[in-house]
Amino acid sequence: MGTPAPLGLQGAYARGQRSTYDELRTRLLDVASGLLTSDGPESLTVRRIATEANCPTQVIYTMFGSKEGLAEALYLEGFERFRRRLESVPLRSDPYDYLLALGPAYRDAALSEPGYYSLMFERAIPEFVPSERARTLARAALNIFDRVIADCISAGYLVPTQPRRVADALWAAAQGALSLERAGHLQDAKTYETVTTATISSFRTKSG
Image (cartoon, rainbow, N blue to C red; front, side):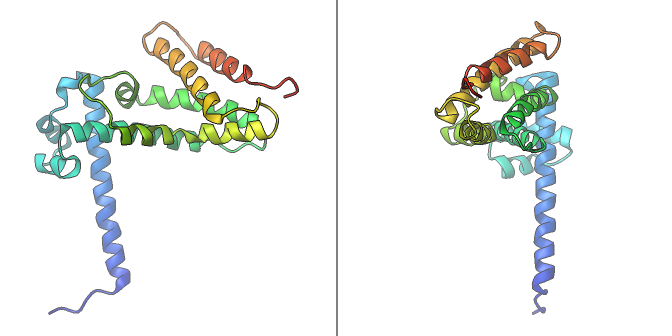
């Protein structure tokens, strides 16, 4: 019977295993997202993804359980990437300036991740319906807007109301402009900026 490895080495080994798992999972999701963008939802078979990622099909079943599990993982990964993009926006001392800065970051996230975006908002996989848990986690990924809006209300910039009400209105305006831009009807960010700024302004206080 061998001598147990020191806890420090065990911890390092566990971290190494976790890092390898996370890297493979991210690679599989990126492969699936790329296939979704280039070849459509019919390309998202376990065999095709495994071939593109150069790994056994059993790995995909182990990580995601099924094609439906993979679709939900893609859905959640897309929102997680949005969250990271939004939280990378530098903090501002003024909450209203910070709120305005989040708008372009949201658009950039949408346009830079077309595969994820199409699944998140455009039913790219028609038969996929996110679970209630997934929807709750997806909305929570955008809670930075709720927090900053709450700060704007506290600072007197926006009328007293539920932050989620303002955030949802802003979300709807952003999604409308993005859908038109992705469909080729808008050629730049001007309309997106106009409608999102107008939505925020509709909640401004008279003194704000």
